[in-house]
Image (cartoon, rainbow, N blue to C red; front, side):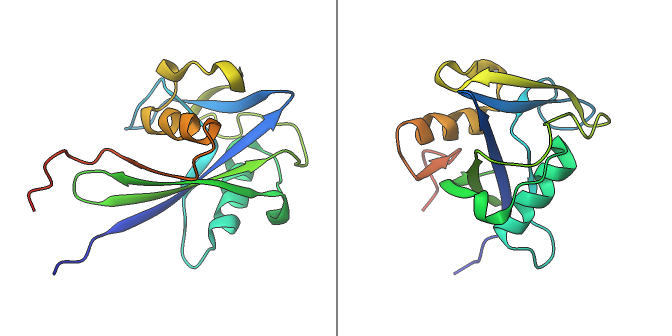
Length: 150
């Protein structure tokens, strides 16, 4: 039996007055022009919540306390030669005003209505996860081939 390479990533839903904050990807090698939640890879020996706090501050310039993060969804995502484990957290409280804190990697910071997200503008797997979250689902799978060759 072969093992798999799994890459853990975190995503933070900053929600205020019925809207969610997104950053537009630019100057990257992946899905430029699409909108993303503040997100990133778990580094070193970080916990998922530690990574979520760090990424939110790095990308959106706000500080979220770990205890203010609520785990709302886990996505297992097939990416060809590896699997991503995507953990989505929601935060309603944070310190500071969300901004584009990484202009070298992102365009604008935009707020979209949570009940009417422009899914065609959002990274496809994130849009899928947000639909699942709205439906109350805490787990989903994305990108798996129909025939796994088993």
